[in-house]
Amino acid sequence: MSKGLFITGTDTGVGKTVVAATLAYALYQRRISFSYIKPMESGISSQTYLENNSDAALVKKAGFLREKLNEIVPFTFREPLAPLLAARREGVELSGEFLHSSVKALIKPSQLTLVEGAGGLLAPLCPNYLILDLIRDLQLPVLVVCRTALGAVNHTLLTLERLRREGIHPIGIIANHVSAAAGAAEETFIAQLSEFDPIPILGELPFQNEAPADIPAWEKLATHINIGKLLDQIKP
Image 1 (cartoon, rainbow, N blue to C red):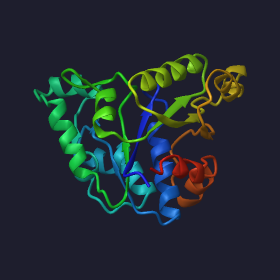
Image 2 (cartoon, helix red, strand yellow):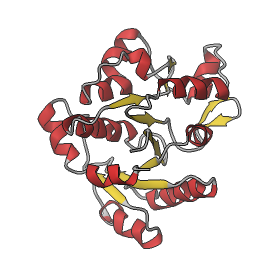
Image 3 (tube, rainbow, N blue to C red):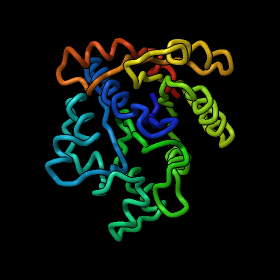
Image 4 (cartoon, rainbow, N blue to C red):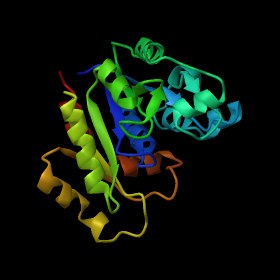
């Protein structure tokens, strides 16, 4: 099996963390040894927020991870902004090389590591360094998370096209319903996307008012992801 999986999105707010947490729960249930890294997380106003309300804390809880939060999310910033802007407003400047080496050092060759990005492919992390650059440097298989709303077919096709143009092979997508009001665009998203791209569909998550709070809720959500097919896709 590959040493890891990079979870990226077509945009911000598409549900990458819910997908990462659901995968973490599914891997825990299958007794597969894994870890999780969120290289940068913005909007962390305090240590209490980090421990109770952060994306990193949600995935740690869902996957019953033993790692400390500072091993899961090495760089945090107070304001809920793109990492580069949030860092600059705190007087912090990280190089892409330092970010890459920091993340790489946390990846354990002996187990599967989930790495969750921020925003979409071209979200800036460091000066002259995008999510796309981090994906390229880590050389991990890529899972794309997308929403099913109007315009999502365009955003998803653009993301897949850019990855392939950079020589990066996306293993599949997981579609996330981000609105309770499902119209024609949401209901036909998978069919529309499949008409224009043969990318494997590895899951379709129903709308969630809030992240699952207990094991039965995570278990129910995990049934919407084809974890077996996903694991087959990341075998070397």
